[in-house]
Image (tube, rainbow, N blue to C red; front, side):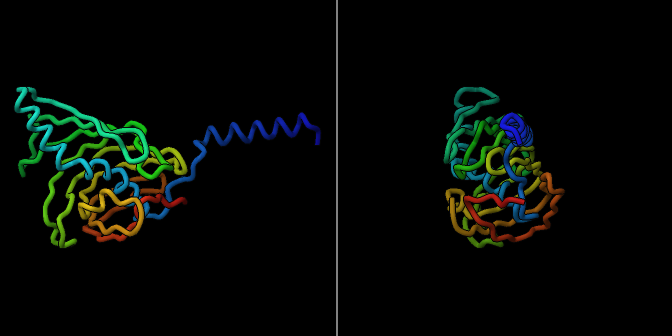
Length: 202
């Protein structure tokens, strides 16, 4: 095989990898999709208690109906929060628009896109501990070791200290639907044990 032919084949393979995004698809079925949703929720859960209250106080003090703030993710990128005080849930919670800008929690994958959260912090009867209890609705792309997406419409509860976990097992309770390239995963108040700081490859 001539040198020119080898170079041509190598160039074609390189272009093919770039075109495909370079990363593996998200694996792990229902647990893998839940892991990705949990990882995406971590910067929200870590900062949620102080941010939610701070945003509402800031809006009330200024008379504004919408306010926003940004926080850094664990390994780079950021999440930007916005709250609309005209949109109040039946239980008195506010909806928070959270935009992900290259948000990297595990040092391997970045999230981009938007999720709408409603959240509270309370004792979860299943986990029997103080928990970050939230709903997530929206779509995020994942790029890095994993090249995929999650489209979530779920309610999720996780122990509050787990929002800072980047290794070890984490227990969560999840209800709703998460779609990935693998398919649609449906949860009915499922209690799962997942691994923090990792996303499984297909």
